[in-house]
Length: 314
Image (cartoon, rainbow, N blue to C red; front, side, top):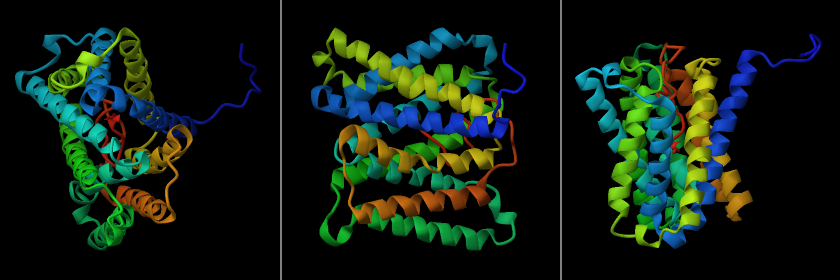
């Protein structure tokens, strides 16, 4: 029995810890996946992890056809296709860029949604706020890419920006799905679709090199970077406003930078670090003007302000 004198964290503090833990597990899973790219290739690495995540979520959630209207089911399928594309592009990016840099560039997607996809236009000073945070994010991108001495791989940059566009579409779709589909059913449909798409893309390249140990490793990574963080996000969103949640999730590029340093030994220069800091600050500022009024989302994926990937998700 817990003693009445045992200190207990209030719900917001517990929610904040859960959100940070969700981001940390996602980025740790991504960092641990990077060495496997050399053995399997980026498509197969992303595909196997997404496929395992889809299987696990189908088993755990067991969605039923009667839980969906016809158009809602198709929305979940489209969401899955977008999620799979986003993860494939991101894995292709981290094969060429440091994890922190790729995550910061991908974060431009939710940052754009928070700045321009919400209803902040009616708020006093929202236009000035958009310009301020857009300029700061743009400066961060310039510092990350260091165009004055070709400091970034062009293909990696293109893949990261494609992942950013996918993340923006993912957020808008998950808002729609989260408003119409109860609980985690939307996730239990979209994730298997994402896994199937990624496996189809990966089949001609790296699946022939898969061994049983690698398959089991991917199962562990799917739990670490998909099932566990989605559960933590779901619990965190029950305890935090969407604005507070989005502000916390704006820290994800910084967490990615830390994981890249600790797990992969990626030591960033001072200029890219400054770029990541600017993107994080822009994300925090954008969240304050772009969060939706809803405070109790029904699904852990409908992140109404800058948030993680499933993958990120990732």
